[in-house]
Length: 408
Image (tube, rainbow, N blue to C red; front, side, top):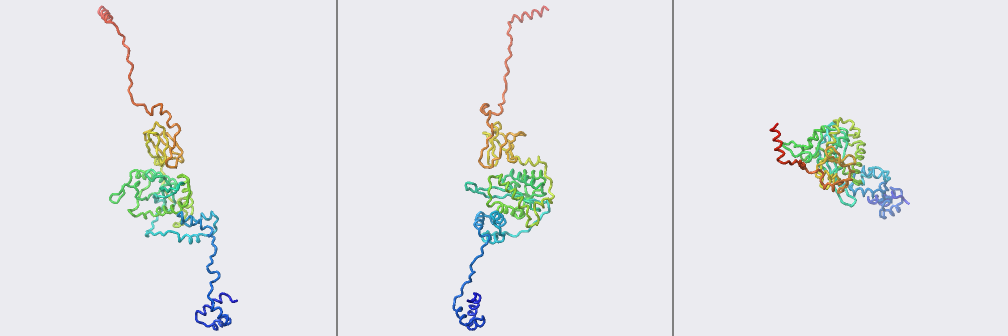
C-alpha cells in the first residue's frame, strides 16, 4: 500500500497530462499502480476538518454570557476566567471576542500632556443598573483624573447637582492628598451660567468654592469635549471595565467597590505613561489642602423641615424633632451617618438609608407635641397686672384733717 503523499503526487501528475507510464517511472512505481490511483477520486486528508481542542472551549459559555452583559474588555474577561480555573493566555480570548466587539470610530485629535501637579479633569457620567425586580435605573458617577499621573477617582451619587459636585470634588482632593493648579471641566450648568465675549460666566457658588480650594477653574471649548480627552476616556473605561456584570447591595457598597477598583487599576503600569499612577501621584507637586473647616463647609446642605417633622435627603426622609417643623436646618452625611443641625446644635442623627423612598423615624420625634398643641414656641402676649386695692374713707375724715392743719 502506498502512502497518501504518493497518491497526491499521482493525481498531480495526471492533472498535468502525464501518462501512467511516465508517472510510474517518475515515482518508482509500476505503470498499473499509477493507473489504479489515477482513476480513483482524490480523497480528503484524514486530519482535514479536525479542530484542535482549546483551553478556552470549556469557558466559552461564560464568555458568551459576559459579552451579552456588555463585557468586551479582554483583561476583565481574563481575570474572571482565571478565578474559574482558566490557565490559558489572553490572545485566544481576544481572537474569540473580536467578531462580537462593536465597531467604534472617532475623529483624530491631538494629544496634550500636562506637567505634574498642573491639571485635573472632571466630568459626570451616567450609568445603568438593574434592580432586584428587573427594573432598569440610571445613576450619575463623578469622575476625576490627574492629567500627569493618570490617578483616578470615581464616586457614584444619587444627584449631580451643585451640592453633590462640590462634595465629590472635596472627596477627590482628599483622596489625592492635595489640590491641582487647574481643574478642567465640561460646560455644565453647575459650573457656568453662560458666556459673554467668549469668556465663561461662572456660577457664583462654584467660583467661591474654587477660591476656597485654591484651584483655577477652566472649561473646555464649545463642542470640543476632546480637549478633556483623558476624563472622557475614563468615563468609557468605567462603563466598559468597572461596571459590566458588577453586583452591589447599595450606593455605599458600590462606592466601596469603586474605591478598591481605582486602587487596583492604578497599581498597574499605565499604557501611555509607562508608570504606575499611584507611584507617579507621589511625584505630583499638588497644592496643600485647605483647612478641614473649609472643606467641611461644602459637605453641608440646607433643608426645610416639613410640618410632620421630616427632611428629604438623597431620596430618603429623615425624622427631625417636631419643634423644628417649618424651620431651615443644615444637613450632611458624615461617614455612615446622616446629621441635621440647627445653628451649631445637632438635633438628629440617623444611620444613612441608601434606598430611595424610605422613611427613617427619630425616637421621641413627637414627644410633647399633643400637650403643647403642636406649638413649639409660645405665642407672643402681654400680661395684665392685678388691680391695687384703695381704702375708701368718709369725707368727715378729710374735714377733720383740714381743721387740725389750720389750728396748728
